Length: 469
Image 1: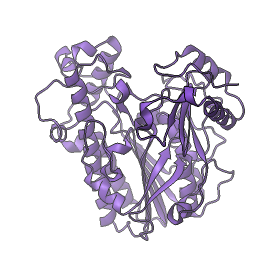
Image 2 (image 1 turned 90 degrees about the horizontal axis):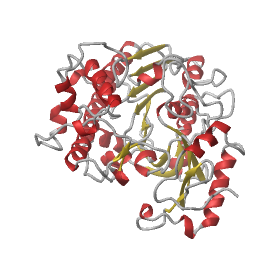
Image 3 (image 1 turned 90 degrees about the vertical axis):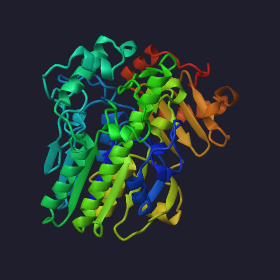
Image 4 (image 1 turned 45 degrees about the vertical axis):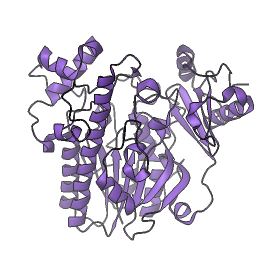
Protein backbone atom coordinates (compact mmCIF):
# COMPACT_ATOMS: atom_id res chain seq x y z
CA UNK A 1 0.00 0.00 0.00
CA UNK A 2 1.24 3.48 -0.89
CA UNK A 3 0.94 6.18 1.77
CA UNK A 4 0.52 9.94 1.26
CA UNK A 5 0.57 12.33 4.22
CA UNK A 6 -0.59 15.92 3.62
CA UNK A 7 0.00 18.52 6.36
CA UNK A 8 -1.34 22.07 6.18
CA UNK A 9 0.12 24.62 8.60
CA UNK A 10 -2.35 26.65 10.69
CA UNK A 11 -5.47 25.08 9.15
CA UNK A 12 -8.27 25.44 11.71
CA UNK A 13 -10.68 22.54 12.05
CA UNK A 14 -13.66 24.89 11.96
CA UNK A 15 -12.41 26.26 8.64
CA UNK A 16 -13.35 22.97 6.93
CA UNK A 17 -17.03 22.66 6.09
CA UNK A 18 -17.06 18.89 6.58
CA UNK A 19 -16.73 19.39 10.33
CA UNK A 20 -20.07 21.22 10.42
CA UNK A 21 -18.81 24.34 12.12
CA UNK A 22 -17.39 27.70 11.09
CA UNK A 23 -15.05 30.35 12.49
CA UNK A 24 -16.74 33.22 14.36
CA UNK A 25 -16.55 35.41 11.25
CA UNK A 26 -18.44 32.96 9.01
CA UNK A 27 -18.18 29.79 6.89
CA UNK A 28 -15.24 29.11 4.58
CA UNK A 29 -15.59 27.35 1.22
CA UNK A 30 -13.73 24.03 1.13
CA UNK A 31 -15.52 21.92 -1.50
CA UNK A 32 -12.54 19.66 -2.28
CA UNK A 33 -11.71 18.87 1.33
CA UNK A 34 -15.41 18.31 1.99
CA UNK A 35 -15.59 15.83 -0.89
CA UNK A 36 -12.45 14.13 0.39
CA UNK A 37 -14.02 13.91 3.85
CA UNK A 38 -17.00 12.06 2.38
CA UNK A 39 -14.59 9.37 1.18
CA UNK A 40 -12.63 9.29 4.44
CA UNK A 41 -12.79 8.48 8.11
CA UNK A 42 -13.17 11.84 9.88
CA UNK A 43 -11.64 12.06 13.36
CA UNK A 44 -13.30 14.62 15.62
CA UNK A 45 -11.08 14.80 18.74
CA UNK A 46 -7.50 15.18 17.60
CA UNK A 47 -4.86 17.35 19.29
CA UNK A 48 -1.17 18.11 18.88
CA UNK A 49 1.27 16.49 21.27
CA UNK A 50 3.39 19.65 21.24
CA UNK A 51 3.40 22.96 19.42
CA UNK A 52 4.28 24.98 17.40
CA UNK A 53 5.57 24.12 13.90
CA UNK A 54 8.76 22.14 14.53
CA UNK A 55 7.84 20.28 17.73
CA UNK A 56 4.53 19.29 16.11
CA UNK A 57 6.31 17.87 13.09
CA UNK A 58 8.83 16.03 15.23
CA UNK A 59 5.90 14.26 16.94
CA UNK A 60 4.25 13.47 13.58
CA UNK A 61 7.48 12.33 11.92
CA UNK A 62 8.56 10.05 14.78
CA UNK A 63 5.51 9.00 16.79
CA UNK A 64 7.52 9.81 19.90
CA UNK A 65 6.73 12.43 22.59
CA UNK A 66 8.40 15.82 22.59
CA UNK A 67 6.72 17.06 25.81
CA UNK A 68 8.11 18.23 28.23
CA UNK A 69 10.86 19.48 25.88
CA UNK A 70 13.66 17.74 27.72
CA UNK A 71 16.96 18.86 26.16
CA UNK A 72 14.80 21.27 24.21
CA UNK A 73 16.32 24.64 25.12
CA UNK A 74 17.76 25.25 21.67
CA UNK A 75 19.97 28.23 20.79
CA UNK A 76 21.26 27.29 17.34
CA UNK A 77 23.17 29.36 14.82
CA UNK A 78 21.15 30.33 11.79
CA UNK A 79 17.77 30.42 13.52
CA UNK A 80 15.80 32.29 16.16
CA UNK A 81 14.71 30.72 19.43
CA UNK A 82 11.22 29.81 18.26
CA UNK A 83 9.95 28.00 21.35
CA UNK A 84 10.94 25.13 23.62
CA UNK A 85 11.63 22.14 21.39
CA UNK A 86 12.42 24.34 18.37
CA UNK A 87 15.25 22.17 17.14
CA UNK A 88 16.18 19.11 15.10
CA UNK A 89 14.92 15.57 15.49
CA UNK A 90 17.33 13.75 17.85
CA UNK A 91 19.75 11.52 15.99
CA UNK A 92 18.84 8.49 18.11
CA UNK A 93 15.11 8.76 17.27
CA UNK A 94 14.17 7.02 14.00
CA UNK A 95 11.85 8.85 11.63
CA UNK A 96 8.97 7.53 9.57
CA UNK A 97 10.94 8.15 6.39
CA UNK A 98 13.92 6.16 7.70
CA UNK A 99 11.82 3.23 8.86
CA UNK A 100 9.78 3.10 5.66
CA UNK A 101 12.87 3.45 3.45
CA UNK A 102 14.44 0.49 5.22
CA UNK A 103 11.23 -1.46 4.61
CA UNK A 104 11.44 -0.91 0.86
CA UNK A 105 9.36 2.22 0.39
CA UNK A 106 10.48 4.97 -1.94
CA UNK A 107 10.17 8.14 0.12
CA UNK A 108 9.71 11.78 -0.82
CA UNK A 109 9.16 15.12 0.91
CA UNK A 110 7.78 18.20 -0.83
CA UNK A 111 7.71 21.21 1.50
CA UNK A 112 7.72 24.99 1.68
CA UNK A 113 7.93 24.98 5.50
CA UNK A 114 11.22 26.82 5.63
CA UNK A 115 11.75 26.15 9.34
CA UNK A 116 12.38 22.50 8.46
CA UNK A 117 15.38 23.41 6.32
CA UNK A 118 17.15 26.04 8.40
CA UNK A 119 20.76 25.49 9.49
CA UNK A 120 21.01 22.64 12.04
CA UNK A 121 17.57 21.23 11.21
CA UNK A 122 17.16 17.71 9.79
CA UNK A 123 13.50 17.12 9.06
CA UNK A 124 14.30 15.67 5.62
CA UNK A 125 16.25 12.81 7.20
CA UNK A 126 15.36 9.47 5.62
CA UNK A 127 13.66 10.88 2.53
CA UNK A 128 15.22 9.63 -0.68
CA UNK A 129 14.16 12.83 -2.39
CA UNK A 130 13.32 16.06 -0.64
CA UNK A 131 12.36 19.36 -2.24
CA UNK A 132 12.43 22.68 -0.42
CA UNK A 133 10.37 25.38 -2.13
CA UNK A 134 11.95 28.66 -1.06
CA UNK A 135 10.49 32.01 -0.09
CA UNK A 136 8.03 31.71 2.76
CA UNK A 137 8.05 34.43 5.42
CA UNK A 138 11.54 35.52 6.46
CA UNK A 139 13.38 32.93 4.39
CA UNK A 140 16.35 34.92 2.96
CA UNK A 141 15.36 33.90 -0.55
CA UNK A 142 15.91 37.28 -2.18
CA UNK A 143 17.81 40.43 -1.26
CA UNK A 144 16.08 42.77 -3.71
CA UNK A 145 14.58 44.75 -5.21
CA UNK A 146 13.81 46.39 -1.87
CA UNK A 147 10.12 47.35 -1.65
CA UNK A 148 9.23 51.01 -1.34
CA UNK A 149 7.69 52.52 1.78
CA UNK A 150 4.43 52.85 -0.16
CA UNK A 151 4.36 49.11 -0.86
CA UNK A 152 4.96 48.33 2.80
CA UNK A 153 2.25 50.81 3.83
CA UNK A 154 -0.23 49.11 1.48
CA UNK A 155 0.13 45.73 3.17
CA UNK A 156 1.01 46.84 6.70
CA UNK A 157 -1.14 49.72 8.01
CA UNK A 158 0.79 52.52 9.65
CA UNK A 159 -0.78 52.01 13.08
CA UNK A 160 0.54 48.41 13.15
CA UNK A 161 4.07 49.23 12.04
CA UNK A 162 7.22 48.76 14.08
CA UNK A 163 10.78 48.04 12.88
CA UNK A 164 10.42 44.25 13.22
CA UNK A 165 7.14 44.10 11.30
CA UNK A 166 8.41 46.44 8.60
CA UNK A 167 11.48 44.25 8.06
CA UNK A 168 9.25 41.16 7.99
CA UNK A 169 6.92 42.56 5.33
CA UNK A 170 9.85 43.88 3.24
CA UNK A 171 11.40 40.40 3.12
CA UNK A 172 8.07 38.83 2.21
CA UNK A 173 7.52 41.31 -0.62
CA UNK A 174 11.03 40.66 -1.93
CA UNK A 175 10.40 36.93 -1.84
CA UNK A 176 7.11 37.42 -3.72
CA UNK A 177 8.67 39.62 -6.41
CA UNK A 178 7.42 38.69 -9.88
CA UNK A 179 4.48 36.60 -8.64
CA UNK A 180 1.60 37.26 -11.03
CA UNK A 181 -0.65 34.21 -11.39
CA UNK A 182 -2.39 31.87 -9.00
CA UNK A 183 0.02 29.11 -9.98
CA UNK A 184 2.86 31.17 -8.49
CA UNK A 185 1.42 30.95 -4.97
CA UNK A 186 3.19 28.60 -2.59
CA UNK A 187 0.45 26.05 -2.05
CA UNK A 188 -0.05 25.73 -5.81
CA UNK A 189 3.65 25.08 -6.30
CA UNK A 190 3.75 22.56 -3.45
CA UNK A 191 0.80 20.55 -4.79
CA UNK A 192 2.09 20.71 -8.36
CA UNK A 193 5.50 19.38 -7.34
CA UNK A 194 3.87 16.69 -5.18
CA UNK A 195 1.84 15.51 -8.17
CA UNK A 196 4.98 15.55 -10.32
CA UNK A 197 6.85 13.39 -7.76
CA UNK A 198 4.10 10.80 -7.84
CA UNK A 199 4.19 10.73 -11.62
CA UNK A 200 7.96 10.38 -11.74
CA UNK A 201 8.02 7.59 -9.15
CA UNK A 202 5.23 5.36 -10.43
CA UNK A 203 7.77 2.61 -11.10
CA UNK A 204 8.30 2.07 -7.35
CA UNK A 205 6.64 -0.88 -5.65
CA UNK A 206 5.57 1.24 -2.68
CA UNK A 207 5.56 4.99 -2.14
CA UNK A 208 5.58 7.21 0.94
CA UNK A 209 5.14 10.90 0.17
CA UNK A 210 4.88 13.69 2.72
CA UNK A 211 3.41 16.94 1.39
CA UNK A 212 3.94 20.00 3.58
CA UNK A 213 2.07 23.23 2.82
CA UNK A 214 2.99 26.21 4.99
CA UNK A 215 -0.28 27.85 3.87
CA UNK A 216 -2.70 28.88 5.28
CA UNK A 217 -0.12 30.10 7.82
CA UNK A 218 0.37 33.84 7.83
CA UNK A 219 1.29 36.12 6.11
CA UNK A 220 -2.16 35.98 4.56
CA UNK A 221 -1.33 37.17 1.06
CA UNK A 222 -3.95 35.65 -1.23
CA UNK A 223 -4.90 36.06 -4.90
CA UNK A 224 -7.53 38.82 -4.93
CA UNK A 225 -10.22 36.65 -6.47
CA UNK A 226 -10.09 34.32 -3.46
CA UNK A 227 -10.34 37.12 -0.93
CA UNK A 228 -13.19 38.61 -2.95
CA UNK A 229 -15.19 35.45 -2.34
CA UNK A 230 -15.55 36.82 1.19
CA UNK A 231 -14.92 40.55 0.97
CA UNK A 232 -15.29 42.60 -2.21
CA UNK A 233 -14.65 45.92 -0.50
CA UNK A 234 -11.80 48.25 -1.40
CA UNK A 235 -10.78 48.42 2.22
CA UNK A 236 -7.30 48.54 3.70
CA UNK A 237 -5.07 45.47 3.56
CA UNK A 238 -3.68 43.59 6.56
CA UNK A 239 -1.83 40.28 6.17
CA UNK A 240 0.31 39.67 9.27
CA UNK A 241 -0.49 38.09 12.62
CA UNK A 242 -0.11 40.48 15.56
CA UNK A 243 0.67 37.82 18.17
CA UNK A 244 -1.12 40.02 20.64
CA UNK A 245 -4.52 41.43 21.65
CA UNK A 246 -6.94 42.68 19.01
CA UNK A 247 -8.93 44.94 21.35
CA UNK A 248 -7.26 48.06 19.95
CA UNK A 249 -7.21 46.86 16.34
CA UNK A 250 -9.46 48.78 13.94
CA UNK A 251 -12.51 46.61 13.14
CA UNK A 252 -11.97 46.97 9.39
CA UNK A 253 -8.42 45.61 9.70
CA UNK A 254 -9.49 42.64 11.81
CA UNK A 255 -12.25 41.89 9.32
CA UNK A 256 -9.87 42.08 6.35
CA UNK A 257 -7.40 39.79 8.14
CA UNK A 258 -10.12 37.20 8.70
CA UNK A 259 -11.27 37.42 5.09
CA UNK A 260 -7.71 37.01 3.81
CA UNK A 261 -7.35 33.87 5.94
CA UNK A 262 -10.64 32.54 4.56
CA UNK A 263 -9.46 33.20 1.01
CA UNK A 264 -6.15 31.47 1.64
CA UNK A 265 -7.93 28.40 3.07
CA UNK A 266 -10.05 28.23 -0.08
CA UNK A 267 -6.89 28.54 -2.20
CA UNK A 268 -5.40 25.61 -0.26
CA UNK A 269 -8.59 23.65 -0.83
CA UNK A 270 -8.52 24.34 -4.58
CA UNK A 271 -4.94 23.08 -4.94
CA UNK A 272 -5.53 20.09 -2.71
CA UNK A 273 -8.27 19.28 -5.22
CA UNK A 274 -5.71 19.53 -8.00
CA UNK A 275 -3.39 17.13 -6.18
CA UNK A 276 -6.21 14.68 -5.48
CA UNK A 277 -7.30 14.76 -9.14
CA UNK A 278 -3.70 14.10 -10.17
CA UNK A 279 -3.65 11.02 -7.93
CA UNK A 280 -6.87 9.84 -9.56
CA UNK A 281 -5.43 10.35 -13.05
CA UNK A 282 -2.35 8.34 -12.05
CA UNK A 283 -4.52 5.47 -10.81
CA UNK A 284 -3.25 5.82 -7.25
CA UNK A 285 -6.53 6.14 -5.39
CA UNK A 286 -7.05 2.36 -5.47
CA UNK A 287 -3.80 1.52 -3.69
CA UNK A 288 -2.92 4.55 -1.55
CA UNK A 289 -3.75 5.47 2.04
CA UNK A 290 -4.19 9.26 2.15
CA UNK A 291 -3.98 11.20 5.42
CA UNK A 292 -4.76 14.93 5.68
CA UNK A 293 -4.16 16.92 8.85
CA UNK A 294 -2.81 20.17 10.32
CA UNK A 295 -0.19 20.99 12.91
CA UNK A 296 -2.41 23.54 14.72
CA UNK A 297 -4.84 26.36 14.09
CA UNK A 298 -4.62 30.11 14.69
CA UNK A 299 -6.57 32.68 16.70
CA UNK A 300 -7.74 35.54 14.49
CA UNK A 301 -9.72 37.63 16.92
CA UNK A 302 -10.94 34.64 18.94
CA UNK A 303 -10.99 35.67 22.58
CA UNK A 304 -9.66 39.09 21.59
CA UNK A 305 -6.31 37.67 20.45
CA UNK A 306 -4.43 37.09 17.20
CA UNK A 307 -1.75 34.42 17.07
CA UNK A 308 -1.23 30.99 18.57
CA UNK A 309 -0.33 30.45 22.17
CA UNK A 310 -0.12 27.67 24.71
CA UNK A 311 -1.45 29.69 27.61
CA UNK A 312 -4.34 30.24 27.61
CA UNK A 313 -4.95 27.35 25.25
CA UNK A 314 -7.96 27.73 22.93
CA UNK A 315 -9.75 25.20 20.72
CA UNK A 316 -9.18 27.33 17.64
CA UNK A 317 -5.47 26.56 18.03
CA UNK A 318 -5.32 22.94 19.19
CA UNK A 319 -8.53 21.30 17.91
CA UNK A 320 -7.16 19.98 14.62
CA UNK A 321 -8.59 18.17 11.56
CA UNK A 322 -7.66 14.62 10.62
CA UNK A 323 -9.01 12.66 7.65
CA UNK A 324 -7.90 9.17 6.61
CA UNK A 325 -8.97 7.81 3.21
CA UNK A 326 -8.53 4.05 2.83
CA UNK A 327 -8.08 2.77 -0.74
CA UNK A 328 -10.67 0.01 -0.15
CA UNK A 329 -13.26 2.53 1.01
CA UNK A 330 -13.17 1.43 4.63
CA UNK A 331 -14.52 4.11 6.93
CA UNK A 332 -15.79 6.33 4.11
CA UNK A 333 -18.18 8.89 5.52
CA UNK A 334 -17.73 7.68 9.10
CA UNK A 335 -16.68 9.73 12.10
CA UNK A 336 -14.84 8.69 15.24
CA UNK A 337 -14.58 10.49 18.60
CA UNK A 338 -11.43 8.63 19.68
CA UNK A 339 -9.10 10.89 21.63
CA UNK A 340 -5.99 11.11 19.43
CA UNK A 341 -2.73 13.03 19.08
CA UNK A 342 -0.19 13.70 16.35
CA UNK A 343 1.96 10.76 17.45
CA UNK A 344 -0.87 8.39 16.55
CA UNK A 345 -0.48 9.33 12.88
CA UNK A 346 3.00 7.77 12.77
CA UNK A 347 1.68 4.64 14.48
CA UNK A 348 -1.17 4.38 11.94
CA UNK A 349 1.24 4.74 9.01
CA UNK A 350 3.67 2.11 10.27
CA UNK A 351 0.84 -0.30 11.02
CA UNK A 352 -0.63 0.18 7.54
CA UNK A 353 2.83 -0.45 6.04
CA UNK A 354 3.39 -3.56 8.17
CA UNK A 355 6.50 -2.05 9.72
CA UNK A 356 7.40 -2.65 13.36
CA UNK A 357 9.27 0.31 14.88
CA UNK A 358 12.60 -0.50 16.56
CA UNK A 359 11.34 1.03 19.81
CA UNK A 360 7.81 1.44 21.23
CA UNK A 361 5.97 4.56 20.14
CA UNK A 362 4.03 7.09 22.15
CA UNK A 363 1.42 6.92 19.39
CA UNK A 364 -0.94 4.02 18.84
CA UNK A 365 -2.49 2.62 15.66
CA UNK A 366 -6.15 3.57 15.83
CA UNK A 367 -7.76 2.32 12.64
CA UNK A 368 -9.67 -0.70 13.95
CA UNK A 369 -10.74 1.01 17.17
CA UNK A 370 -12.01 4.01 15.21
CA UNK A 371 -13.94 1.93 12.67
CA UNK A 372 -15.39 -0.58 15.10
CA UNK A 373 -16.07 1.75 18.01
CA UNK A 374 -13.61 -0.12 20.15
CA UNK A 375 -12.35 0.97 23.57
CA UNK A 376 -10.57 4.30 23.88
CA UNK A 377 -6.81 4.26 23.34
CA UNK A 378 -6.32 6.73 26.20
CA UNK A 379 -8.42 8.59 28.72
CA UNK A 380 -6.72 11.97 28.24
CA UNK A 381 -4.23 13.91 26.15
CA UNK A 382 -1.48 16.20 27.41
CA UNK A 383 -0.35 19.05 25.17
CA UNK A 384 2.83 21.08 25.60
CA UNK A 385 3.35 24.55 24.13
CA UNK A 386 6.13 26.63 25.59
CA UNK A 387 5.75 27.04 29.35
CA UNK A 388 2.08 26.13 29.17
CA UNK A 389 0.54 22.68 29.44
CA UNK A 390 -2.96 21.44 28.69
CA UNK A 391 -4.76 18.27 29.74
CA UNK A 392 -8.03 17.26 28.07
CA UNK A 393 -10.27 14.32 28.89
CA UNK A 394 -13.92 13.48 28.24
CA UNK A 395 -15.16 16.02 30.78
CA UNK A 396 -12.50 18.66 31.38
CA UNK A 397 -10.25 21.07 29.49
CA UNK A 398 -7.39 22.15 31.77
CA UNK A 399 -4.57 24.58 31.12
CA UNK A 400 -1.94 26.29 33.28
CA UNK A 401 1.73 27.18 33.33
CA UNK A 402 4.05 24.27 34.06
CA UNK A 403 4.77 25.73 37.50
CA UNK A 404 1.10 25.16 38.36
CA UNK A 405 0.15 28.83 38.38
CA UNK A 406 -2.70 30.59 36.60
CA UNK A 407 -5.02 27.66 35.90
CA UNK A 408 -7.97 27.57 33.54
CA UNK A 409 -10.57 24.81 33.80
CA UNK A 410 -13.48 24.43 31.40
CA UNK A 411 -16.36 21.99 31.74
CA UNK A 412 -16.87 20.31 28.37
CA UNK A 413 -20.33 19.17 29.51
CA UNK A 414 -21.51 22.78 29.73
CA UNK A 415 -23.65 24.32 27.00
CA UNK A 416 -20.92 26.89 26.28
CA UNK A 417 -17.79 25.26 27.73
CA UNK A 418 -15.33 28.10 27.19
CA UNK A 419 -17.56 30.86 28.51
CA UNK A 420 -16.55 30.37 32.16
CA UNK A 421 -13.34 29.35 33.91
CA UNK A 422 -14.62 26.99 36.62
CA UNK A 423 -11.24 26.33 38.29
CA UNK A 424 -12.26 27.98 41.56
CA UNK A 425 -15.35 25.76 41.80
CA UNK A 426 -13.35 22.56 41.23
CA UNK A 427 -9.95 22.87 42.96
CA UNK A 428 -9.62 19.09 43.34
CA UNK A 429 -10.02 18.63 39.58
CA UNK A 430 -7.41 21.33 38.96
CA UNK A 431 -4.90 19.62 41.24
CA UNK A 432 -5.60 16.16 39.77
CA UNK A 433 -5.18 17.26 36.17
CA UNK A 434 -1.97 19.10 37.03
CA UNK A 435 -0.70 15.86 38.60
CA UNK A 436 -1.52 14.13 35.31
CA UNK A 437 0.51 16.76 33.43
CA UNK A 438 3.48 16.23 35.77
CA UNK A 439 3.24 12.46 35.47
CA UNK A 440 3.20 12.68 31.67
CA UNK A 441 6.31 14.87 31.93
CA UNK A 442 8.11 11.99 33.62
CA UNK A 443 7.57 13.36 37.12
CA UNK A 444 9.28 16.71 36.69
CA UNK A 445 9.81 19.56 34.27
CA UNK A 446 13.17 20.74 32.89
CA UNK A 447 14.62 23.64 34.88
CA UNK A 448 14.65 25.98 31.87
CA UNK A 449 10.91 25.38 31.33
CA UNK A 450 10.09 26.17 34.96
CA UNK A 451 12.21 29.32 34.76
CA UNK A 452 10.32 30.36 31.64
CA UNK A 453 7.00 29.78 33.41
CA UNK A 454 8.13 31.88 36.37
CA UNK A 455 8.99 34.76 34.03
CA UNK A 456 5.65 34.61 32.20
CA UNK A 457 2.79 36.52 33.77
CA UNK A 458 -0.48 34.84 34.65
CA UNK A 459 -3.03 35.27 31.88
CA UNK A 460 -6.08 37.51 32.36
CA UNK A 461 -9.06 35.53 33.52
CA UNK A 462 -7.08 32.75 35.17
CA UNK A 463 -7.75 31.45 38.66
CA UNK A 464 -5.59 32.49 41.60
CA UNK A 465 -5.27 28.82 42.54
CA UNK A 466 -1.87 27.19 42.40
CA UNK A 467 -2.37 23.70 41.00
CA UNK A 468 0.71 22.09 42.47
CA UNK A 469 0.45 20.45 45.90
